[in-house]
Amino acid sequence: MLPTLNGRIQTRLLALGTIGFIVALVITPVLPTGSLSLGQTYRVTLSVLLATVLIGVLWELLYHFLQQFRWKDWPTLFGFVTIVNEGALMWFLVHSTTLVLPRDLHPSLVVFLIQFIVTWMVFWLIVNGPMRLVFHRWRLQGGRFL
Image 1 (spheres, rainbow, N blue to C red):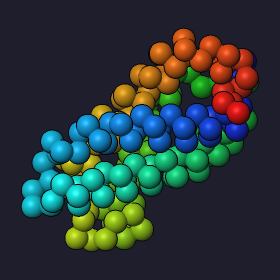
Image 2: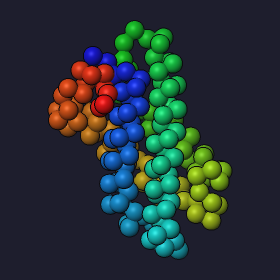
Image 3: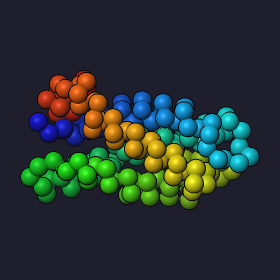
Image 4: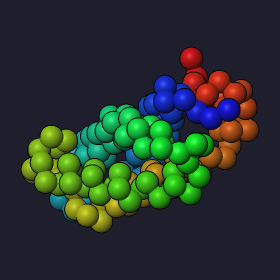
């Protein structure tokens, strides 16, 4: 069974929120943020993560619309390659606006890329690997947890 829109949104919210939070807790202290304190660095990484989770719901709506022109689900590689367009939009929102963070806390491109790529890779690997084994009924319920 293919994941439903509701199931994909639930998966993104729960898995990216949980996995992303754990990744942020681990990598934030070692990010090269320069003069920011550890508290400010955590504010940056957790704000970027929260924005990514929320904007991800809008991405799922767009992907669902585009999927209507296909007769089956996206290949797994397409899910991996979405790191490019989602990362580019998040970089624009984080760096060019004050919607996510105030100007004095905007991360450098290196800090953003480290956080975004590491989080995305861990998320993608877990959702497409161990999660399918541990939650085998999850796929049969259209990707819905509830």
